[in-house]
Length: 210
Figure 1 (spheres, rainbow, N blue to C red):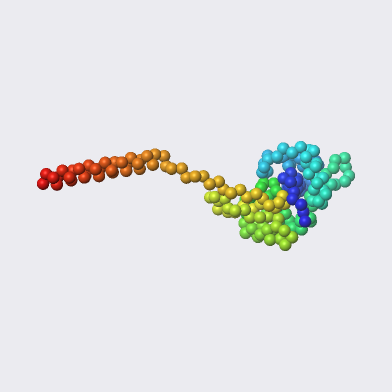
Figure 2 (tube, rainbow, N blue to C red):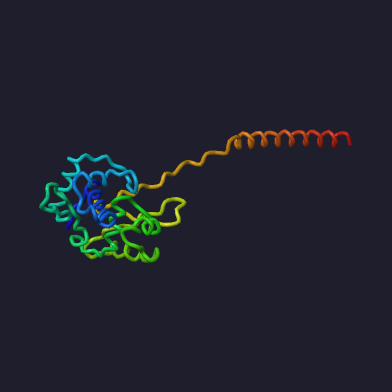
């Protein structure tokens, strides 16, 4: 069974998968190109600033799991990913995993848009079908559906390659009283009490005069 991967390891793996499909002429990637891909500011969540040494350490660790392979020959070492073969998943599912590794939890609709350059899904139901397959794998779930956030219309999905994702309970803020409402109510109650007293005094005088 695959051990839990670190955030940087999933970033390296996701970046390799992404670049293989988006910039095939530059693939496999050199260490410097891979570091730049891991640290890019767009299509990444969270944004990272990993050093070459840190990326190299992640590569070496992933090589031990057969998830990353080093290309021999040439003056610069180059690296490629082996995600589909090791996890035994189809390319459609691997594309979704790559997006989740690079961008964090996403809804099925967000995944369909974000994964378009890796695989073009016909519709959201196709994305959901592959996600459900990944979640129900006999060998162990690779994704999990997260509880729906307050006000959200769809549930988000997260990968489990780094272990079970932390589910943060939505913050419950105490309902603040409407400004001045309590004071106005108290004032109205006092006025009602004064009116009752006034009415009683008037009715008392009238009956005595009669």
